[in-house]
Image (tube, rainbow over all chains, first blue to last red; front, side, top):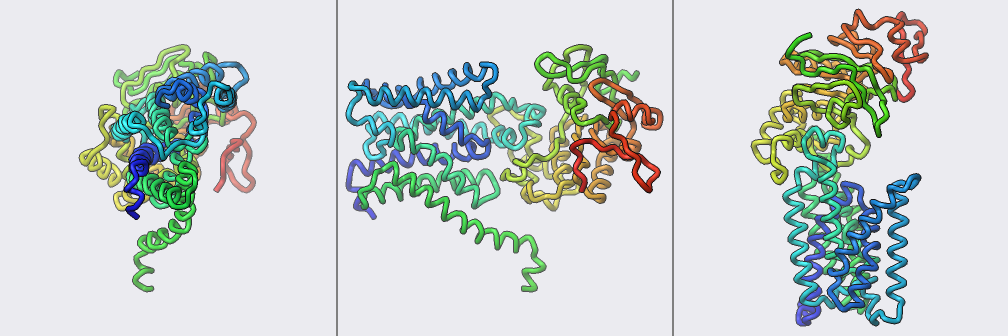
Length: 281
Length: 249
């Protein structure tokens, strides 16, 4: 249990995974409630060339990730203005173009040998700069989500009424996408371009199975992301499996376990709603 | 024309990307007035409601909305799955008065509790919104508009999908609110219901008629409003309107 903690690299991995779990778990709830899973996956893939360029330059991944996301967002805005192309098609065009560009860069002779870290993540080897930037971005995401909580909850529930509630749904959604981009940049360092969506969708979907309210959903999703992530790290440590993939699998396992658990939980809940029957029984 | 009208529209046109979906809309809404908004699906009822909410700028004419408007939309499928209680939804009405970084606190929840009590749902405040009946959900949304302190309620087919007791309860609630001076515009397909309200506004891409129900609702107006979709009900003295997407229950 404590043996892995003797290792410096495991301690760093645990710190990194905790930050990813907080940012990914909390953000993931809004991804689910705003039906942004496709956007999350697209954003993650479209920053690939930026990450590869950062890796080639030997810079922290965040240096390439942030401009990568800005370029992707602008490209999507431009392409969706082309007549006959709706937003979803525009996202598809931009994402595959950018991902292909990233692969070209990654396979070029200049690319360093560790480039697959960008694809599959490097949860076991974050640098000081990686950890520091992840901590700052996680704090920004967490504080912003807390401040925007009321507006996010109202806008996700009823976009039609959000405007008459004075909550500027367009601006709230734009802010949500920016925060999603930041959270992706945090998580992609550890989990890689291909697996990062797991930490946004899995824990929040698990939490949604277990509760009918937003605040407990946020707390549960963070807990599932952090502890599922740590379970994945331990699996990786003892079984010698790939770090990012182990984390993703552990989170998916949590979701699968939540399905029967949710059915068990719903039994006492419905019994509570019918107290007369409960006393007879 | 009263000086204190809550809504004053003159020759209003509104629509999307510069193209008018409705035009020639002229009416006024007084405090305490319950106005039925009649028209076929696609006839511009929703466009008019969105213009009144300030979401669509007038393309022509003038529109003055002199009080806070709140919308009571139909429940969408996604909202049934949304993890909020009746109290959470009613509390959202308080957001209009809070700065962007503040979330509703205890005082706002108390206001929302009082509003839920007023619409007769105090006992169900903790229930998940999606588990309530259709009529209860409409009343939660009305409670939200009370927390918003709206003087004008815009209800989009609030009675569709409700059973008879649910409809009667909702109608009584709207009457109570009107007696307090709140005005309501109620998009509906139910002519009998429209006859029980204070006024009707018939719209089919343009204004067909406006006025007291007994003066306005004759066959010529209804046929202009609904086109050919008025049918005689066999074995009944009254006529029924069959809009394309109206779900019977």
